[in-house]
Image (cartoon, rainbow, N blue to C red):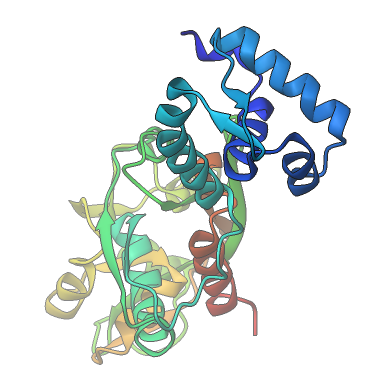
Length: 300
């Protein structure tokens, strides 16, 4: 039988009739009048082509067809009720889960340590997996369910995606403490005289080079690397200067032996956003995680 041929509300009536063996009592149990319940029984008999309940000395007796339906019907409706029941509030302290974050190495270096510290205290049963999506592939991975959440440069998002600003950043320069350029202010002349290491993702010029180009200036780039994580090791061991996001530079400076200085050319700030797919939007655990990250990176 085609299920679409049955008004599913009738199954609730049938469940009550099989339990109560009385049209009047069944109607009272589900909030229907006696005539409405009788009408529903008539429709059920027509659809299932069976009397379903017949009069007996005491109330009504189910037919063999109705008796065979009783167990599966009760089980199916119980499963549906559980599925539609209100979800219990998310309790981070007792939650056991794995979250998958889409982070570049910049995002991982900035986000992971504060997040892991917070999870250790507030949600010790939540584990973290980090994946670095291909350039421009974060939305595809989110839609496929391969990522729960991703950190991307702020910008337009496709339909069925959501976003929230997490933090903004700017660029600054980092060099070793005993660099030959000395300890004073990093002037434009010093900056242009130095040799530089640049993190390149194959996405065009770095922001500082775009600024220099507009002024008719160039710098010597002695080394290109694909990851930020190698930068502090290069800077500590050479006379190369790196111009990188300030949040990273401050983290690297904690290692010692380096100093963070203002880049002598005005560089634009940029904004980083969390993005996620619509299928996670109302999930209580996901909402809690987004709130936690927003709290961790709220301006102070």
